[in-house]
Length: 480
Image (cartoon, rainbow, N blue to C red; front, side):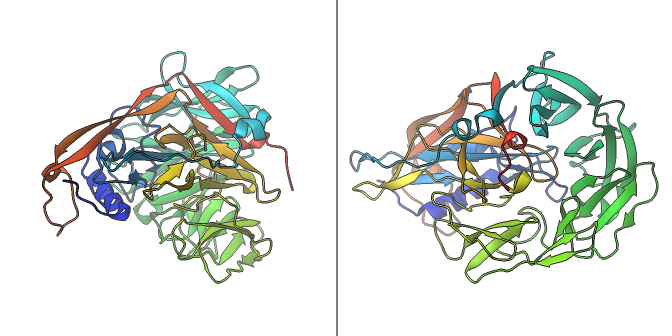
């Protein structure tokens, strides 16, 4: 027999199962959406939900989406992992619709390039941000999420230059570099020991041209709950999870709170906002109400229209979603509420829509209709996500979708909204399904125990590992 339940219930089941999954091995570009931060100290726990066994019951498609915590990583990887159950109901219909979003390589050819995934000595690159239209800042990792050095990669000459090593402080065990930030004169980063109970963090800087990294200082207690950092000509700045923005002189010294920043959170120096960064901090549904320039002290109120939730704003543009819309329809507007629009085919699921230079990042469902059984029909050529230019309305596709609808892409690990997105076009998700006893499938508490056989599918990643396709938004011609 088959045991039917809704996709929402399946998603909840998968999310719960993910929390109990063992840690993965290797670089799971297509497997997880990782977040940095001390508030969740566990290692990535996504093997069951994405890279391991996904159990799907009955007809339809269950999509395992979400955020899985990371103990040591410097950044995040976003993925869409889709497992489709097979039943004997009948053949699936075909659709003729297409998602009208062209790949980024067609929209902005000068901004798309290829870089090696591994260094000459076998370490693995993780993109951070653009340094210029033709230079990328990369972290070289000696092992999973273990940053060993920073390199500048010249996309025109196709060669890299080592800028600095990223050492652990002497005597500190379990140290991991976290977010890296590019300033006008310096590159800065912070680190912590995320897999123990210490409330401790430190800050480092190196000139943009490279050199020996210098530890600026250390903080403990609430000040170590770092959200984002920035770097100026004379200070490292950061916001704490509980609100408030602090600075520490590059020459060393005690941290001090910037006056008037109670309840504020750093977005990208000098801009601060009144909602916490990411989904760990405050509810996704909360709307931002102001943007503050910390250099001038000017506060701009956000015009939040009725029917909008999760509105997040930079200095000029805001991104959010319409209330009570199952498809998470996106909303784009200026801070003052003008130029409001809802771009087609873009979903505001999840957080972190802001990219560098005012661009927005949205998911693309790929669904173009339903067949005779009511099953969703996807455009297999649709991108996984899209970069949206709110000034021109230009949309550029990101990532490569597998025939099954899965796939993955990464965002640069910069502390500020990133200027880099990347993916491995050689990777693919391979799904193998078999019949198992229904009693072996995870189910929500209180549901009756099913009987009979169900389809259990294992999704693994194969291929790839040679080159990343990278979109550098600093190479996109300005539109405003």
